[in-house]
Amino acid sequence: MLFNSYLFILIFLPMVLIGFGIIGRLGHHKVAISWLVASSLLFYGWWNPLYVWLLLMSVLFNYAIGVALLDSNKKVFLVLGIAVNIALLGYFKYANFFIDNVNYILKSNFSFDDVILPLAISFFTFQQITYLIDAYNGKTKEYSFLHYLLFVTFFPQLIAGPIVHHKEMMPQFCNDFIYKINARNISIGITIFFIGLFKKVVIADNLATYATPVFNASELGLEITFLEAWAGAIAYSFQLYFDFSGYSEMALGIARMFGIILPVNFFSPFKATNIADFWRRWHITLSNFIKDYLFYPVNIVMTRYAILNKYNKIGEFLITVLVPMMIAWFLAGLWHGSNWTFVIFGLMHGCYLIVYRIYLDIRYLIFSKGGKSGIFSTALLRMFMFFIVTMSFVMFRSESVNGAISMYKSMVGGRGISVSSWFESKMAVLGDIPNILGVRYDGFFYNGILTSNPENLILFLAFLFFIVWFSPNVIELFRLNNPALGVDVLLKNAKNRILWNINIYFLIATVILSVVSIMFVQQESEFIYFNF
Image (cartoon, rainbow, N blue to C red; front, side, top):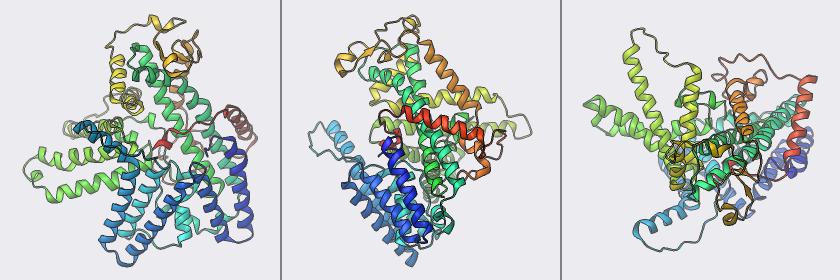
């Protein structure tokens, strides 16, 4: 079941919300929690009922390990819990990938039945690993199994995050306030939900019609022009941006309807002026997981047992920064999917962050005595950041490394920088794709959309640049209404004058957004992060 479906919007969500409100009003809080858990399991099982048992077994195992850690704090329980979680994730997500690579390297022909990847396994596995580590470090306390079950399965954040912490959610579940449906929470939740839905179905899904043909052509080895490659790459960057932004806001909105506040997971990442700032804004909870549970532990272990850093600055940099960073981002890339494109994507960002760290060290040495450190304007820095992130998203989107290389070759002018074909009414770039894929393509654009007016795409992308760089995001718009957890630092410099409130103007805007969005929900399309 998808957030952007009529079934969810018109039937599932209203029924769950009304049922929760009625039960909560009657004072049956455990029954209300049970209602949410049952609804969440139905939501998850709609995709494949068989894997509900996998989810439940994972929850039961991790809860038992967590209780053992709270009682004894023995490291053996922590190691066992993490090992089982990693083994489960490794089998379902990477078994096929491992066998394929072994066959390729050894020229062998080992057979292995394809394993269907359970929905959201990466998210609920990471979430429970954080719980076990926090339990070992004494950062959690014991709650009922029912509360823990809701902590893992709560449907607004189950499928694609945010990755929530035990200490963030459990106190909310124990608060009597959430069991009384609040009109203001409903208003805030509905508005945020439809802003996210609009981003998904009106913007992201339409951008896919431009990006998909270009990447398909690249995978087939067809030569695409310089401008076609860049148009496809930029369209995909915005598609991924608005797809994930839309999901994150829909999750926030749905949870808020139930009186639950989720952690912030997306905060205008294309406004970032450096790569570290980008990852403080993009998939924030995953970034925090990488930093707290991958980079720092590797850094501590290497620093403790390595002697190289005792002799020179280069050795210290290798031990404390370079190696931990590359290990962390190798694993982060692999987390996104069992494909070398994702691994390379992660390593690219690891390299970006290392180069940025070197730049900071050099800048400190040069300007440590009070010199000016601002070399580039904010606009130029944002443009540069968009450029390097888009280059990495090409690898992220491509189905194979060869397909990505083909895109890169066109993007750097390896096939020439010709603009004439861009403005032709019938572009031959897609060659025989219609016959190969059984899909009708008319020129460069999918299904002939804007074939005679390709400049409309350029105007559309220019408009999106304006939106992502200059407009306030949802967190800023709702900043007086506690829209998400962990926003204090992010909102420190917020200056937007447009602020949400319950009035006729925002009511009209919400109605327009909802009507337009529902009109565009013509066919269900998965969120991109559902695949991870």
